Image 1 (tube, rainbow, N blue to C red):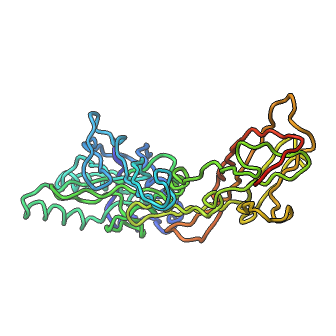
Image 2 (cartoon, rainbow, N blue to C red):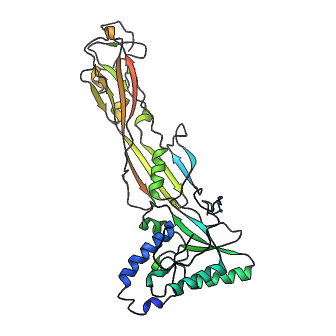
Image 3 (cartoon, helix red, strand yellow):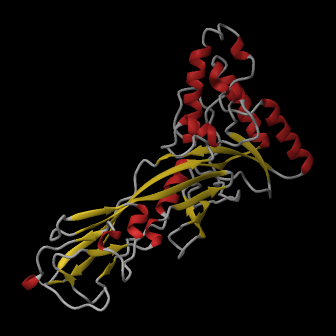
Length: 363
């Protein structure tokens, strides 16, 4: 793996650094993105040792046979109306992180040599410091390694290729600030200490929360009850279960980063091509009105009327469709906003027989 280069602090102030500042900042941003994503940059590069291990989500190294970090995972805790529980509960899932830290393979001595060599190689580029720690930080790591008797390894910040530059900066919690106010993409870790934690983006947490949200197919209860046919030209009542229409909320969190997704039932629609009209949409509490003896036929708006018996057809198909609207908020702020991909409507079906008439002691 090749490393991007830096130059000594202050050299950029010589020979028209002011005229190149705007271009330098833009170029520096591209270099930081290239370094964090592991892509090539066009500066003179000083080769550093290949990465030896990946920084796992809890800070522990996660080495693989080829020295890559493709196996790094982050632990996300889910709570609320999650699919693994019968009601409100919690679960933990393992997901690929957006960004993580991996060993650069350089101890304190090797890193400061790399720092100095890269500075000499790029003496004309004011933007070469972008995302690098200060030289004093590199010196402090050398002193710590010598005085403490334990190796100090420098870890490098890496991100998935689909993570935007602004998101990379936002997720980088490195306490060592680099130049231009940009968090450094290197930080030292003393042998035996946990490495820096991997991080998950709020967008990933949003998608995870939505994926594991417990949205079930709607129940279908009717009157006349199960086992009894509906009566031609008389309204057949339908209703759903309270859990079908209640607001669902799932929170996904990984360290200080979190996202919440909530989903509201817009309506439960009961429909049959044999009914007239063929469908009825029952919003919110209207879908929960249960039939009881003595209630008037107009007490519920969730009824289907069948003008003909099923006869030789045997039965009609009745479908219940629950339509949801989901929105989300996160630790990034911005309030509640619609999720990019709304939940798919959930359907249930029943077969219904319709008879001419019958004497019923209860619906």
